[in-house]
Length: 324
Image 1 (cartoon, helix red, strand yellow):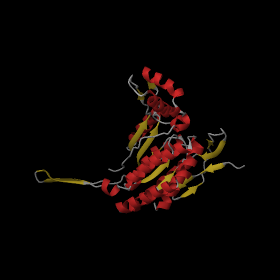
Image 2 (cartoon, rainbow, N blue to C red):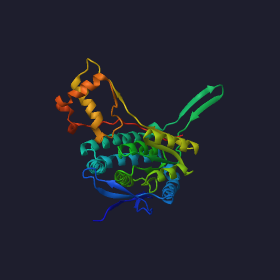
Image 3 (tube, one colour):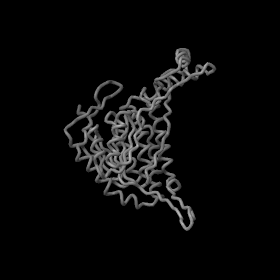
Image 4 (cartoon, helix red, strand yellow):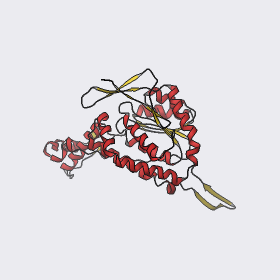
């Protein structure tokens, strides 16, 4: 049986990788390899950025209502394809399909937020801010921006980034995790079907080498990253050194304190949900629990609501605006 090859998405279509480094995509249900990612070469990263750069003036010239219309159509397409997205996500990440559907719902909220761009991107005007001086502000796109996203939320986190980036008039290059890369291609196709111009959204598959190429490219004006703290620090330092705007979200763990008068069953349910939601890969597991919290978790065995099978992850929604 031939191994499935995960392609890039450049200029509105899937493009087979030309590199010689192959990265495995595992099936979390069986532990067997189910696909291969051909890591992008520097030339392929450059091609994606160039396509985004070429189409950006056209996309920027589109009216706010037109851009919002594309995002609204994208929102409807994601909604209509929730089950397909969630099933594909589950097959590569390992979270349950129900859990994956919750992630898609959180991602949808960002598309809905972006559809409000005609109001969100209004400027401001202050008459007589000083004697004879009026002050005004306008919101303008940066140009080509890029997102580097983690394995634990392959649908939601990219949608944090590209929905708001695109509706602001930027074009986008996404480098998803090589561990579960296929959802990014499905989202890219939905954007195409929604009417986004070819080249305005590109997907580069790969690992650190692709990230380094994006950081070094002078035409990438901004980088958004979600992942571990050491990598976030490295990307922030490299990106800002190159004069880019960088948003680097690293780590993210929570402390849990359960007070003596707490509802122990509810606290136990919350503790298990935090630890096992999203197949244990969420950013909200609580590594530091109080003594009372530990006593509460021992009641998990007594609480039918605390069964890992009933866990439902509820990741927070975060929105990002990419504008000067």
